[in-house]
Length: 104
Image (tube, rainbow, N blue to C red; front, side, top):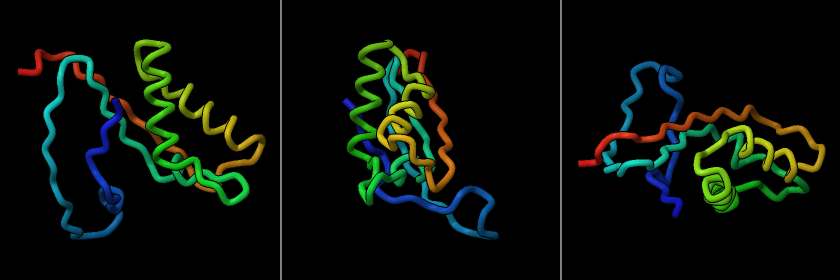
């Protein structure tokens, strides 16, 4: 199951001087994966249709199910397949963290 922690985005760290960032807290269980991504992934569009958050989540679940881990190259590949040869209008930056701790 893919769960969204943040419903809104914020400025990149250091982008706006003296900006106040909100904080959140979440509990992670063993083997949970946290994906941090730029808006370029969900906003990549073909014919006015964005790749979107729903499709992004579904692709993450698919990749995790097939590979047992989140392969970021596969996620970017899914965006390129969706774009069908078009070039993304914005950069796509991704970072995933897998929690290997005890969770308690």
